[in-house]
Length: 118
Length: 421
Image (tube, rainbow over all chains, first blue to last red; front, side):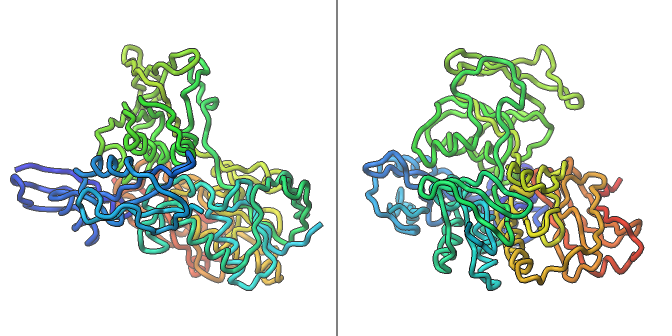
């Protein structure tokens, strides 16, 4: 039996969640105060995910375009995802929400622009 | 001299939200003055996500959050003037500004909303010994370089202080290929949000050294390394023999934010020593009639959502003032910071309070299983349980007008933390 402490990031509350694990099997989860917390703990203990924000080169300027993943991606794929993003260059104009890279690292998640660049 | 009904200084999240709400309340003579090239304030460089959970029920990045407000300002046709620096505000509400386009300008405002935000505490305020070499930046400056200018300050990084911007930059520098060696915090707790500690440090195995500080800075032309030592948790003095040298080319400082109140002081507004911002009443009006303050220039917030909410109230009330609808010269009760409470806002509450208001403050320390209590005079009128209070996370309390009825002879309101034994 293994004890694991997680800090929930679902909201600024930052609930401290304690889980008991037997190998990969979750025995108990305690300390969450809402369903977001419970779900977060379950995900953190199985497949943790993160939203990734990054910068992309823009042709003709040093000023980069800020982008984000359209959904959280698996934590283990963050650096692969960043690498793929770093290999791209975009051309203006770009609008908020525009898809810059489809299906990044085969995750079925897109990379979208988070700022207006005219 | 141009006449303006509601003049807003600052086009960041506070100024934008104030302008929108003043417009929605019916005001049609608004002007936003912004010293930078574009609207959006600090949100422009906060490209990470996590903004707007309270306001929009979704997680946005900084630029996205700002754009929602900018779009509204454009849709309403609210006049804005960027690249314009306000250099003087008088108690009579005459605002002087300079810009390349218009030169020197004077505005006579009926009401002013101070929304200038805050700036970072610089190295000079720390008294850390060592050369004044290149490679030492405040975290926000580095953030601007990386996220807006596309320039990396260095490759091996130590972060002093664990404020939110420092934590966010620990992750950003890691994402950009730099090695972040440690985040060094003088106190026994971080001043940052829990989720930033988890997502920016823990996720990338960046050590958070609590009760440690930088005691020496090496390098003449450029930073070569820093010496970190453990400090005594009570005296906060470095413990000899615990020094460790970190070879690095970048030191980022995330050691606190200071509201930018030079203009506030010029206007003759009373400043609170607890928040370093203006003293305000429940309508966010300062000690000078018709001058309002909101956002980080009033008190440093943890979440932009609360800035927007507070600023919307300031905008609405500023227009009420213009219309002569804001109650004048009412008797107020002072809000006292009791045990464990620092910088409660507002500092004054009207005895004739009509609607529920929000009191915000920062806990002085980390308190577990605590209760936050409100006393009117000596009578406790409300208590809210909390499993944990930390200085990094602001506490918001609802203050109901009914509370005042429970003790009509009271001369003060006290907000305090009660720790259960």
